[in-house]
Every structure is written in structure tokens, then in C-alpha cells.
Length: 231
Image 1 (cartoon, rainbow, N blue to C red):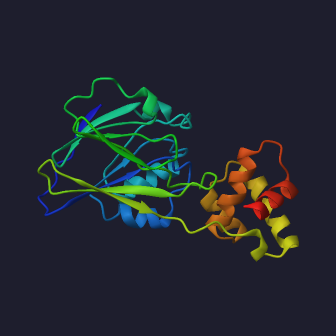
Image 2: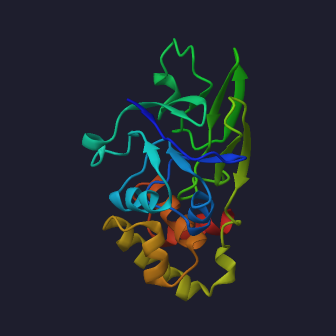
């Protein structure tokens, strides 16, 4: 799929690069994306709400990730796009990048949730990391590409999330009832952002409970509390 955005000339153009939101598009991420002229999403979007939020921020391009089953019919597996003089290829999984991408300046991918930026053969390979729900203790990151439109560019790494909320900061009886409610909402498919709103807790705490629940099948509230205290 090849597309091109025509924009009026500016001194410096900004392209927001995100991936692996998994149903959570944080407000601080949106604040940054609204300052960009285009947005690239490397997949694992998870739901339509994120697509609608992106649409409201800036013209965007997105690829289908392995968690995007419901969105697969409308999302391409890969995108080849020229933005402000930069030829960009994007796909979710690095292992599926074609062998020959000559003529591209920037290769973008996601999937691992780990920020990575390397250079090879005159090309830059970029994984912006995860800017949705925190995965384990990995940082929450995104990137912004700055280019004057002449083929040159710089990549700014942005670290987003504050440290996860510690279980000790909330009374144990209240924390257990919160955890049980978060589990129920997670089973319903409620996004982390909406869980935080419904339970009136910080997004980082909802994120932490959801992550432990989803990564430890069969775990109950007491087990989640023990693991939270150990982190």
C-alpha cells in the first residue's frame, strides 16, 4: 500500500510514531500526536476506539498487528508511504520485513514492546516500543521524527509513563476490592483507560493489575496483590 500526504511547507515537519497501544491511547500520547502532521502506528491497535482517536489527532497510517483480529479486514499488513521527502516502510513484526527494501529511508516495526533504533546500509530501523498498557517492567515509549523535508531527519525518543503505583500506597482491603473489579472489567474486554475511570484509580494502577492478570492465567486477586508487592 503506497500513500502520500501533501502538506504546506514548514520549517520542520513532525511525524509521530507509536505501536502496541493494545486499546489504550494515553492522553499524554495524544497531546504529542496533535502536534504532528502525520502519525504512524506499528500495529496491535486492539480496538476501533484507538483508530477514532488517531483520526482526531492527525492524518495517520496503521498496519495490522497479531492482536488486531477484529480490525484485520480494514488494516493493511504493511504500508509503504512517502512523507515530507522520506520513504518509509512499516510492518508489525520485524521477522516479516521483506529482504529487499532498497529505496526506503526508514523501516518501522513493533511487536516486541521494546524501543530499538539501529542503522544499516543507509537505512534506519525503528521500533517505537509500547505506548499503551505497560508490559512487565518495560518503559512506555514512542518516537517523533523531525525532518525539514529534504530527505534528512532526526528521531526523538519519548519516555512517557510514570512508575507503576505500589500496592502499599492503598489500604489492603480496598486494594483487594479494586483488584477484583479490575479483573471483572478486564474479562468484559474493557480498555485499561476505561477501567481506570470506572474504578476511579490511576491508569498506572489499572495497567499494573491488568498486566499481572493477563500474563498469569488463572491468577486471582490475592495472587495479583502478592506479585504487586514484590515488584
